[in-house]
Image 1 (tube, rainbow, N blue to C red):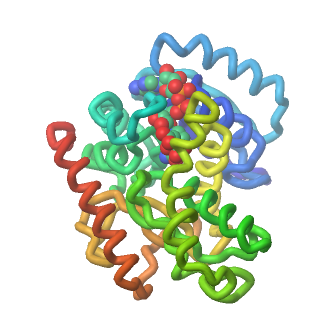
Image 2 (cartoon, rainbow, N blue to C red):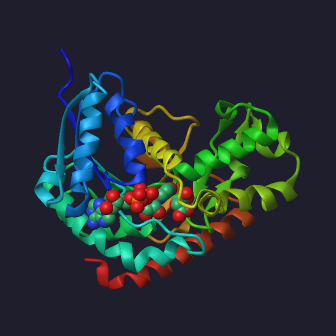
Length: 329
Ligand code: NAD
Ligand code: LMR
């Protein structure tokens, strides 16, 4: 007997990331090859005609797992009974801007969206914020929680993990699958910390396989931390297909426990682990313990370099939090 469909909402469905995301959700990449989905395409009223055009294309894909679509701007139509909400709808930055520069423009979107989800979605809805600055936007949405579970409000650093793994694979000559436990800690910003000290390549410490600390602390760190900016400069607009792919990876790992390494990078509400102030949405190494259950990995050793990096990132998140204090419920 086939499974009951899962409802998945995508905000910003008419945008660039939305376009790269929707067809992969419909094809089963998000929740697995036997899981039917009903997709809610959510956008602002001016973009709903474009969403209807995308629906025609989804129909034309004849996806066996696509059990329905819904196009909406209103809270109930957007998030009614939704099980998974991918919050992409927000302005991207342009050349010369920092992601944090978007905070006063995009932050208010997540007040209304957070409220609409909390009032309409399934009680155990799982939320992934992609729209930037994603950690603090997730904090804003989470602050609206009265009924749903605050632990399920997460933000995306999986793209940063994927970028870091690709850099290590290229430098070492190993395959991406040989890179394990490369976890990005902190904010999705230039203070993010891809922790190579805890990572292995083909079962050996990464620092043994690539015996070049100047490269790790220099080129590697800078490339990962500034990859989004480099793509904007080269492409003229921000990453879209790789961002959509990372959103698929984040939810797929969470839903199924299929992880490329033992840990996955997820920005989740801090419970105070590793000294990170409680409540901030901070990227930690997470273990998927059961479908849609995660735990922050405990007891990992962090050297002085790593600890200083984490502190810089949580201090930055605290200042973002201060900048949106009026938006937090
Ligand atoms: P885009 O401009 O192509 O699309 C944005 C879409 O959001 C548009 O369709 C717009 O109408 C819609 N939108 C605006 N306000 C909305 C609202 N209140 N409700 C619903 N929809 C709304 O942008 P994009 O390239 O798809 O990027 C979207 C966001 O994702 C940006 O903020 C970008 O910076 C961010 N991003 C994050 C990561 C990450 O790793 N976390 C990676 C890439 C991009
Ligand atoms: C990225 O990392 O590619 C996105 O966050 C887009 C950006 O503004 O860098």
